[in-house]
Amino acid sequence: MRTMIVGVHYPAIHAVFEMMMQELKELALALNIEVQYSFVQNLPVPDKQTYLGSGKVSELRQFIQTEAIDLVLFNEELTSVQYLYFQDQLDCAIEDRTSLILRIFEQRARSREAILQVGIARLKYTLPRLVGAHRELTGQQGGSGFRGSGETQLENDRRLLHQKLQRYEKELRQIAKERQTQRDKRKKSDLPIVALVGYTNSGKSTLLNALVDEKKVFEKDMLFATLQTATRYCETDDHLPFLLTDTVGFISFLPHELIQAFRSTLEEIREADLIIQVIDVSHPEYTKHIETTEQVLESLGVKDIPMLYVYNKIDKGNIVFLQTREPHLLISAKEKTNLDQLKRFLGKTLFGNLERYQLWIPYAQGETFAMIMRHVHVNEVQYQEKGIYMDIETLPSFKKKLESFIILN
Image (cartoon, rainbow, N blue to C red; front, side):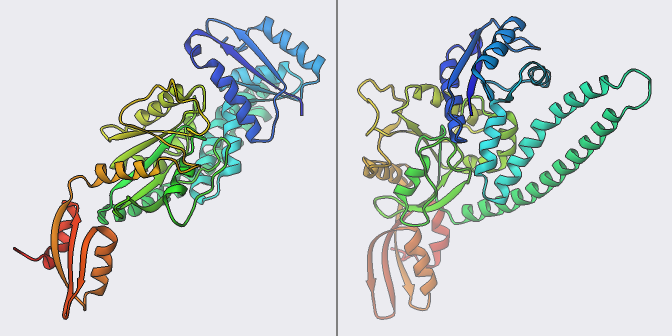
């Protein structure tokens, strides 16, 4: 398939334009589409109807005919008016940035929740373009004053899509309730929660897999390799337990529909005690990736949660002139470089206010003993004649569960 990308370079996106165009190629590659050509127009702002300006569209149309282009990918989300205009003007398939991202998400969605979220985003993207298409059809019916077949079909299609959207949203609300119940249970466990966030393909899933012993998550060197939010049990270097959550990756100009659809999933971040932002230092635009990630976090209302900047892929990147934010660590999740430093940092940050207790557990309380072993740092265990003596350190919030077993000095 002969494919080209098209973008408008204007002052508002000057700082990220080249990165966006490169990302568009990578998004296409994630769908096994290889881009052969690039077409750029310089304007103060994109034209509201033609995006490129009518003269440049004529030039683009001629190029498409000469090079026998099959698919044109636009760097930004086209309005319904622009989309219809290009459908009329260009004799090839067209797709914009948002539609391309949605296609990737549709391919990668596995859980029922992800499928619903992507479905909702697709419907919200489709509805205004459906209206535009049918308006054109209705205009061709003439002005007789009677309801034309185009208008009737528009009403039918809109009603069906709205009904489908309502079904999806209702089912997603139920899943969101179940997810909140799971979050509430995790809170009751008194285990600290750490959330991994970052630009797509920064290495979040690789890092999670490097920190857990089992139940690995899918990882691959590609954009949006996984859409699943995964939470795993982890331990610091002192064997202190915490929960580690991997979230979907971000990208520049992430479609608004997708942010809205994934809000319930991304709310996992708001429950975290610590956020680890994973950054691919081998990418030339890593500083812009940080800005994009933090813009998305701000849009989700995530604030006042401590953040650790983890600069990943130091085995690939040139770190001599690395611009870092504090606090930070340099790692390679793939090579497991400096993960011991990360675990020490997590131990100090999550469990820095540990309190020390001596416990005595009757042998009849075997389940309690097992629970304590999972949730505290154990300094000493003695198996005595009638019970178990323990010297432990734990968070103050966990003391209530231990009160009946604490040895008072």
